Length: 214
Image 1 (cartoon, rainbow, N blue to C red):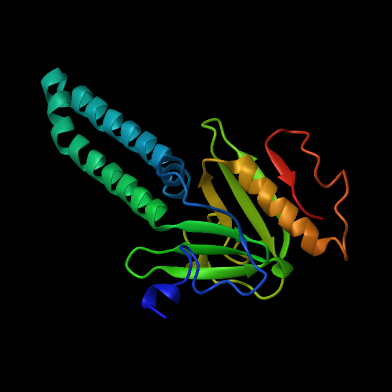
Image 2 (image 1 turned 135 degrees about the vertical axis):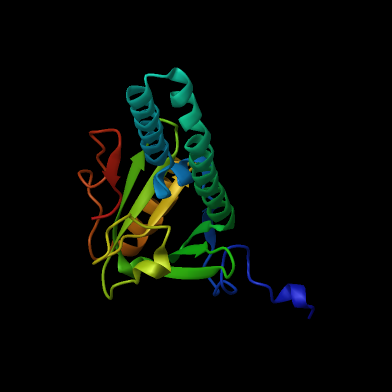
């Protein structure tokens, strides 16, 4: 047996047990990931307001357009630098993250220097909600039961600022409907004996959010 025979599948911490199979696997798209995790658009808006305020204050104080333009020299470059760092972090984390849905669990592999994986058995997933966005990407938020998962273990693949009871999120998916169908079908098979999925559970009246299990 060679070393390649014992390597785990991509995105998984170890070999799949007998009878378990991969149903869906993707890495997030970096642009929506960076926007929603690192709040790239909000940061850009903040810097735009700050730059406009500084330039306006310089013009009011001196009455000189040259002074207002001069103020941009020390406000614009730092703003661009911070936004570039946030975008780079979003790209790096998205590239290093792999979401996997098997027939038994959800696995999140993430991390820059030391990638770590989190196994979420279907028995711990009470429900899953799909949110779609204008850019065509989507997020799947998982509601867990049982012991609390540490915020630091899930970050950045979680609902931001939900610290007391962190919620894992498969974020920035390019094929959210396909991911939701794969996960929903697998969850339904696991939960069916105890809590059958009803037509009301899968209804999606808003077009943006739907529960995939009871």
